[in-house]
Every structure is written in C-alpha cells, then in structure tokens.
Length: 384
Image (cartoon, rainbow, N blue to C red; front, side, top):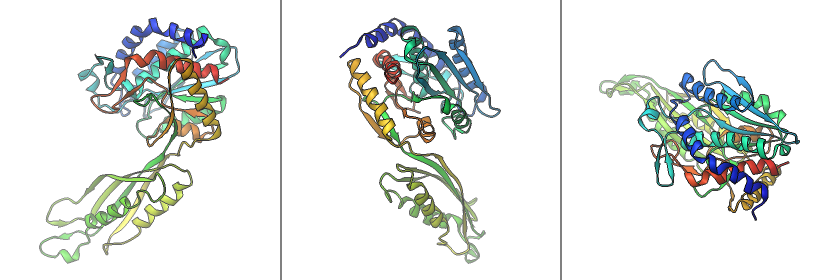
C-alpha cells in the first residue's frame, strides 16, 4: 500500500529522470578501468562536484596506485547512520567508453558501466538528496561511499571500509538489481589461487626421459582441482587461466594455473584451501613440484538475523511503492562481502534493474530508475 513518503519520493524523482539519464551518460563516458587511476579519479571528481554543489561534506581517501576513495556525507536530525556504497571503476579498457557511448534502445540504457556500477552510484546520490530534502529526520548520517578498485582485489576499498564501518549502523550496496528486480542478501566468498609448477627441461626428441613435464603435471592437477566442485554445498572451483612451456620440442619445465574458488559457508574456507594444497603436494609426475600463491579475497556474506531483518524492511518498502521484491543468494562477490565481514547489516543489488555486466550489451532498464531510487531512499527511512 502506497504511503505518503513513498509517493513523495517518486514525485521528487520523476521530474529529475531526464537529468539522471544525462548524468549517467556523463559517468559512462569516463574511461575508468581499475588499472587507469587517472580515469577513476576523474569519476571521483565528478561525484565530488555533484555533492559539493549541494553542500555535502567530502572526505578523501587517496591511494598512490588505484583510484582514490571518497565519502560524500549529508547530515540529518535523526539517529540512523547509513552508508550507500558504490564503486567508481569499471572493467572496460581505455577507449571502450568512447567507442560505445550510452544509448537508448527501447526501455534500456546500454553502455559500459551502466549497470556495474554507474547507475547504482547515481541512484545513491539521488536517494541521499531526496531524503535530505523530504525526510531529514529519518537519518543522522547518510554517506555515499565510493571505492576505486572493486573490480580487482579491492585492497584500497577494503582499507576504506574497515576505517569507516564502526561509524555506521547499516550498509546498502548499490550493485544493479537482478534482472527480475530481486535484491541480494547473501553472496559467496572466494578468491584466486595461483599454482606454479616447476619441472625439468630436456630435448623432447633426443632425451625426453631426462625431463619432467610441468605441463603434464599441471594437467593432472587441473583434473583434480575440478573434482573439488561440490565437495561441500555451493563450492565451485574453476581453473580459468593456464600457461606453460616455451617451444614444442622441449619438455616444459614451467606451467601455471589461476584458479577461481568460491564458497557459501565461512567454515568451508579452511577445508577447501587444505584440499588445494593437498593436490599441489601430490607429485603425479616425478621430478616436478608445485608452489601455491594467492588466496581468499572475500569472505562469504551469510544471511545473519540482522541481514534478514533488513531484507524484510526492504521488501516492505517495495510494497509501499507497489513493487514485489525477493531477496536471493548469488555466487558473485562485491563490497557487501567485506561489509558483512565487518559486522554491518548489509543488503546488495539495490541499484536500478540491469544486467549483461562486463559485456557490450550491459544495460539498465529506464523504467526501474525512479522506483528503485525511491525504494533505496525508503529503506533508509524505514530502517531507523
């Protein structure tokens, strides 16, 4: 059933839709892959200008190697301290944004970063601005938190989130809503392990018996690694990058593999890691040995009672707006994993509805922008 605040938020947002779309076009035009710090910092400067114009407070978190983080904060007269969390970086190499500017196709806005994560970032700004004008009594501190390296190892972002998490009561992460509009209340944890195989080179035609093939040994290990899939519910293991050898007529003395590993439950982390090390220590080809590097980047985001309560608040807010929303688990990882690990009640997937992330058809649905931005603001208002 529609409430006054829900109606007011929609009425506030609706006439601003075309401005939002133009600003999304500007954001998507910025070349800001994680590896291109100057471009990520341009995206950060865009956010800073947007917030400063409205009198918000900006706190910078500079980094020498990746895009600087920033926190844009507006103050209210209530009690709740909430952060709306997005990232400035994308996966697209420099040049893609210029080649594929944001365009409309029917109900879709298609462009690099449109769903992941520029529309979520923009909706966070608009939701905070709407609450500052319509319901400042619903919050004490409302911050739009922007990291610059979410698409890589999130090293700088993790440090930023750790520094500020104790000052907030809840976190709402602004990745795009699922294609059916669902939000995310649980995420797998995971990481990347790198296996380096060392063998012994020899002439493959003259004296192959003197060699120890690192490629053959790695092949055995790849099969064993993939056999770990499903060793516990939800465990996935994928050898995604493989290399080795130098020329065809030499027994290869080097090989490598990069392995994506994901788990649902925190207690599975040690078990799966032990299994990987056991495989690495199993010498299937005499004369070879393996070293294991890398490790876990994100702990699982489990459905705690606090997260479930916040999900119920979100579903109630959706109903106020005439929407139906469910909360789901997903195998992908985001800032929500880090925030859950820091003990904050957190939900994710609260941006506009979109999909095809990291592809030429990445999009958001135009008719989801107004209601999803209103829902985001309403969750903050109802979470007090």
